[in-house]
Length: 72
Image (cartoon, rainbow, N blue to C red; front, side, top):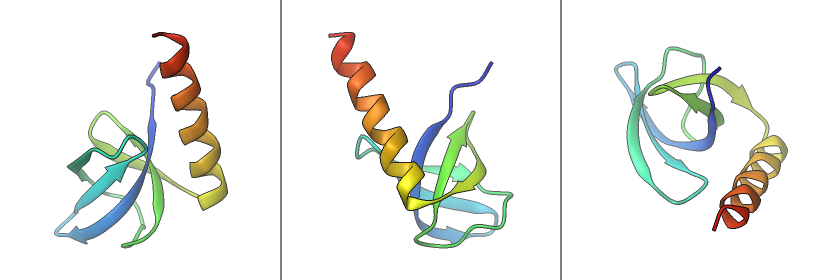
């Protein structure tokens, strides 16, 4: 099983995307899917694996924050 994280694409070039995740961390991931700057995606194992809606991004980001707070 793979846990994926919601993120927003800040820029994309040569098959890579600079993203910011729901926790504000910036990093570069491989982006083999049809997604553009400003799109929301799920990140798994260093890859953008699925494009998602902004609503879904917000929902998943909130769930991650709640889980992190519950763990201390």
